[in-house]
Amino acid sequence: MATISAGMVKDLREKTGAGMMDCKQALAQCDGDMEKAVDFLRKKGLATAQKRAGRSMSQGVIQSYIHMGGKIGVLVEVNCETDFVAKTDDFKEFVKNIAMHIAASNPVGISKEDIPEALINREMEIYRAQVLEMGKPANMVEKIAEGKLAKFFKDSCLLTQPYVRDPNVTISDILNEVIGRTGENIVIKRFVRFQIGE
Image (cartoon, rainbow, N blue to C red):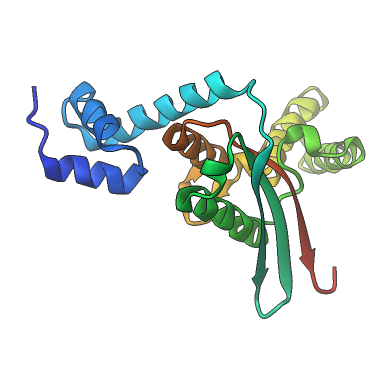
């Protein structure tokens, strides 16, 4: 079994923001493998998030972000269970980063359920036409169009978008890490993005 040094624990803490004991446990479980320990903590955060999903969230913050000298503006509401967590720097930093991400990535909705049916139908029509234009056989059209729609959801829904500051993780991953660290259920409730000329 690998020896877990204080430096390794410190590095893992800086990478994940998880507590010292959690980092030590993750490194021990993963035989000192830093990459596996990061995944271990992310899975633990996800498990914590799922356990807390039914809890009520009546606290939180509304964060604004103005970008490009006032050309883009975002308002986002993120809820949590207690006022105590809402006031922590970790939570406030997370909400600020989400607002900046929304300004940069312009999501259509938070999740697939937020995408209007009319937009989904329009996208599918475009994808079917593109596939036919490529000369693909008729029996393949629907399957290829569905694949393109799945990519559209991934790129357009806030939770599945790659995080602008680290494209290796999604917003959902970041959210689950914060849930794991705070021990509370947290949800991105709603947002609005304004852009001059839109």
